Image 1 (tube, rainbow, N blue to C red):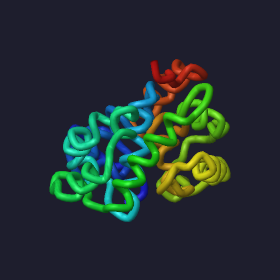
Image 2 (cartoon, rainbow, N blue to C red; image 1 turned 45 degrees about the vertical axis):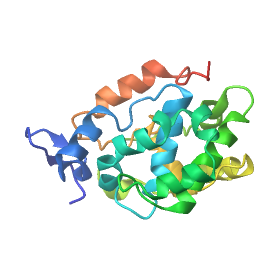
Image 3 (tube, one colour; image 1 turned 180 degrees about the vertical axis):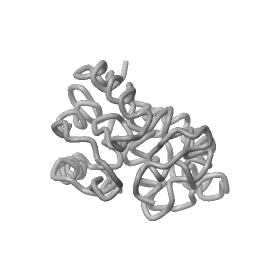
Length: 207
């Protein structure tokens, strides 16, 4: 199914959102809405990286375990993780036990703390795409864009890991820099209103 479909309450949603209650809740309450603060942005970046090669539902169902294991994604705390923390995380069945992704998350926390100016939010904002027409079906939603390719390239230059163009675009979608809710999705207008209200001050730096 590539067109909007009815959820549990009969309202039309992006088709991926009707597959489970977790998807529906994430779609309605979070996906595409502005995200504020470096820790929240770091969480989204980390989860998108962990999702690479897996289904997003796997990450959603492990999200609380990820938060527990990664100090609520406080980049200052995660940057202090040492090899023994990597082994601790590799033994925790609550998360995705992928050594490269775990080590990348720690490296990304350290890279984030090295950023000047407006931090990770500023890097992301520099690659905000221009507004585009609402997609009608999933076939209208790209996986990679020139902006996400440029964002991935800059993040790599800033020593971030496991953030390719596809992951970068998923990040832009998730944090409200792109509104890819389909035209007939019931939350699209509300999501767009929240984006418009947050722009340009969509992020806050670390205190």
